[in-house]
Length: 351
Image 1 (cartoon, helix red, strand yellow):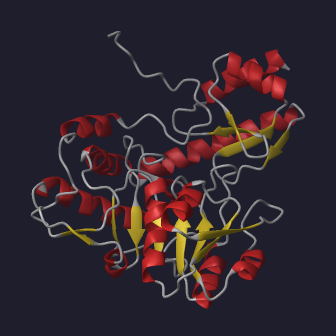
Image 2 (cartoon, helix red, strand yellow):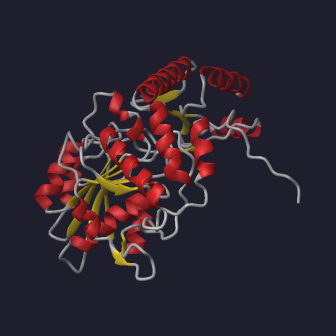
């Protein structure tokens, strides 16, 4: 069989994954065959997972977090809604979320038998809490806010969404899968210390620089995870709250090493660099008379004609569009100023 090599990241502009930290890559290889899904057998990686959850809680303003390292944001979002459904006393459960909610919530609704009610956004592409309140009722089991939307990098008004959840008697979940490693270095109110949220998605394999897969689910109280627990009679540990059974310890170990290497100063420098690149790119695009969505986080959405978009793809740029067809540039750590200058040079050639 022909030897295959991964593509490099030099022209990947729309992905929310990036090159792992080199030490995280090495740790992943060492722990590849361990299974944190069987913590009584694989005690070392289980201990590491607990320490990862503790540090993720530190990032997210929670001193004694519960949770685990998931396969990614989709699993964490599914599990959060599963907690909400399992704890609720209704035969007709629904979830209220903004239209900017990740497509994994549609997967979760289908898997869990939930009605997903999505509210329109406000003029600045954030959740419209008034519109969300109109959708909530006695059967609402969860209210969702997004802290770093995947299309526009917007941060919803999380305290107001948490208040809405309390009023509805529902669980409040925040999806900070991408934004969670950037937001600690901003003035946004988004985490457990800012509002009475119950659960959060936060992914080390995005801006956290761990290997894929390494997502994260955090819960304010351990009893929330009890709603997920099932008996595991043939394992040494007698119950399990995760969605998957056997899980590689690679993501767990890599997350620990990345956090050790980068939290907090490395992530702070990374956040400043990414935001500076996004702001610079937005300014350059506006100077070329493109319509640009102001980059609240290091993500630039720009209205580029279809012919130019296709020509850029033809030149090898790995780019994608929002639901309303803007080109997305996510200023991940591998997206340097030099890369962006090269991108603009090609954009100028195809205009």
